[in-house]
Length: 209
Image 1 (cartoon, helix red, strand yellow):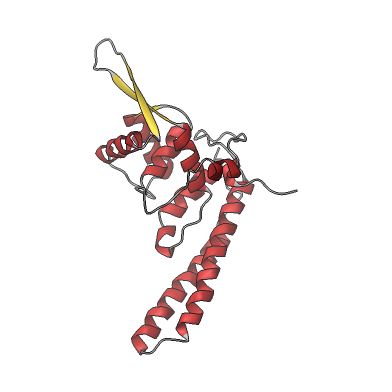
Image 2 (cartoon, helix red, strand yellow):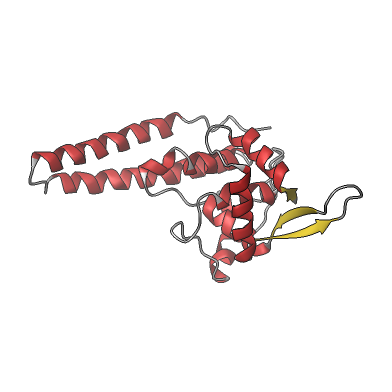
């Protein structure tokens, strides 16, 4: 039986089991594609919080701080700037909630387009080893809200990317013309080897409750 991909699950920041949501084929059929070069990387943790349900900006900031801690720090002003960008691109929207003694409160929610973009991001491994520190760990966090299968799928995809990069660099190494080029390539290979070792040690059973 084929295991479901990460795109096939909805997210719940409360740690509950996730339900089937949008199929991987529908993401591409609708022409919604994830391109990390076209989006602010900070968009995705914010979308991840909104995926569990509507949120006020302050609560969203607190949720990110409590859930991702030192992995991904976002100032309150930065989060509001991200929310403005998400709204402009149709990935989020807000409504004003009247308060008796205070100004109206803005409550943000994710759109269908935002949901598809977020889920595609979640299922995509990072391509550069430097992005393991923040972006991959954010994906790992959200996958752990799902199941061991979701975590295992994400790790397997990331291992495949790292190993492909290792093969490519080993070929590049044979073409190095100077000692400096060789040293730089060996450094990158060492980083990839360390990354593979680290990925193999990640605890897929540590599911967040």
